[in-house]
Image (cartoon, rainbow, N blue to C red):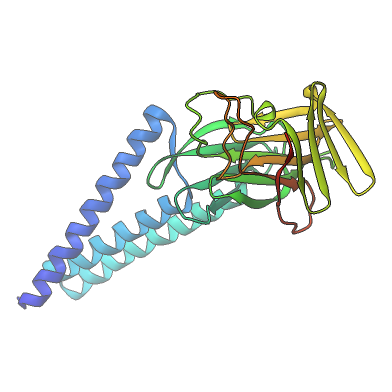
Length: 282
């Protein structure tokens, strides 16, 4: 047998075994801890590669007659077509939203049941694996608009079945405050300005002014996500997201006023950008 042919055959066999073991690891993680692939299509793609590599290895390493080769290729084709059918059925039932952060250090994963609109938020587990964290409070209708406000803060804007608009915020870091829990809305006291927006923190809540329009949000209408962001709501609809900038320092353990910037991101279907605000008056 040709040496190059032999080497290629064993390489394909090795690749098929490695991918098979990787798929086995995935199945164990899923059964024991509910871990999934960030993109479910990866499961069907890797299975297809296993079949392709194993088939090529057998063709190169075994001295098969013409009928044997035809039989092997026929079986492989059936398996590959089956993966295509299963993938199509899965995509018909589940809509996936996968978005990488601008610095590619983390990613957002949402998986929606197309029939019920139930949408689950997944946290990165390890590599391509994710684990279900929580179900969005409102069933999603249609697509979601994904926007990274900072490298570790992402907003998903979506509509529910009744047409109301909502925002879910994924947070993946902290601001080095040394606390497992921080009341974000209380971490930026004072008056903050940026562009035509002014945000003031009071004992009763937050006051947002744009030009001559003033909106007031009590603490009951402020929903926190992680330790980096809050969403301002009215009548259960999201209106604004406030996110802590990467340069933000709260000075919660000393008398100094907060430093750095915060970002205001309006809840809308338009392709708007977050507006940075800096402290104007402590």
